Length: 553
Image (cartoon, rainbow, N blue to C red):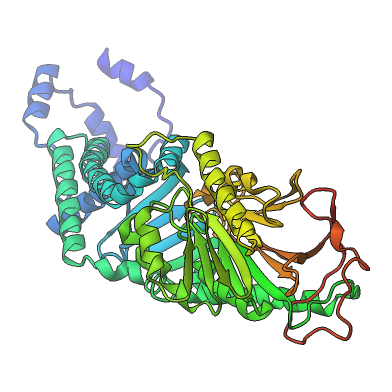
């Protein structure tokens, strides 16, 4: 039956060779071995050996582990390695990033970047200034005494932020390397080895950074973006203090060039001051801005100033440490008359009293300077002293009353005062009718008013651009000063020039000429002939900032 069944099986390829046909016929006649024998034979038969796969080289395995570790650590730093830390009045973000050269990058949006070669290691420190906190900034403005401890506070904040960044970075690199190692190798032991290696690499990088730390890198920064203009304005960090006069000279040159342009374009010879005219430079509220001295010196030279009048707030905190800021007043090229402001202490006044070419006025005292009789009273309040409650307007009126009594005494003695001075306009208003001209400051903007009894009150803006307060408004305060022209015989105001600079950034400069209504052409004859070549120029018509009684020409 088996033979018959096999014979019925179709043979798709019958052998054509007779020998093959004979052998096939013979094998077909041999009975097949039992199934049990076939199974036993197959179980004992050795399977054919597959070709062997060699294990990877140890060096290749190490390089692979290092690659996984570095990539995982970088991903960990990128995803969770950033920390937020307050530094003084600023909110900052700090992070470590892989780098071939190391260093520190400080990003100040939208101004640009500041790069420092602080260290050489495979990690770079990135610091982003996120914002200036308005609450902490306003607290510094409202309490200037806090600036004394600001350096220690910033140092403490930076140290705390750096330690927090170090701990956060350890967690980030270990987590990133372990997670990637587990995804690649699928073995917990190999993943933990990647995490440990990441911590070791971070520790080695930190050690390298510490060994190559260069604290003098801040002296040679690299600017980019809008910050790239900073070295050309004030020099780099190395000479920003020692060569601050570069900034001052450029600012003074700006004033001089604008003044010359103002002179060259003038076509209205309504008032031409001659060499005998007394020129008074009125400044106020410098507030520790060192650039103001260079501006004042430039104006003194350009306008041939006879006397400088400062109506106070030259300082900011009134501390003894600030007194040396006043040293340039003796070398400005003209006598300096000064009254105390509410930010000037008695120590400041005492220090100025000992300076050469400086006249300090207080308690209504009068002095003859450059042919002009001037009397003044110091501000009765010293507001930086928070232990004393501010007395307010009543104290100012009382001080103004003392000034008025002195002016009456001077008039009865036959030596009337030409200019009355006080820092606060409230105080000097009490001199209405007792002097033809009254000067004040304090408001940080110009005001020009004709008082009821005929005294002209001129309030000057901030010659220091507001000092530290320049950043509390949306726009920086302008730098302002005025040149007053007095008739040498009558000591009456003939005209005045208002000089205005654009504040921080110094994007503009303006000089405008104004005439009082009482000095219209014909009321006081104008000097004949051309103006003195070195004298201040006359300018095109403009609107005054004062009362309607002023007539600009």
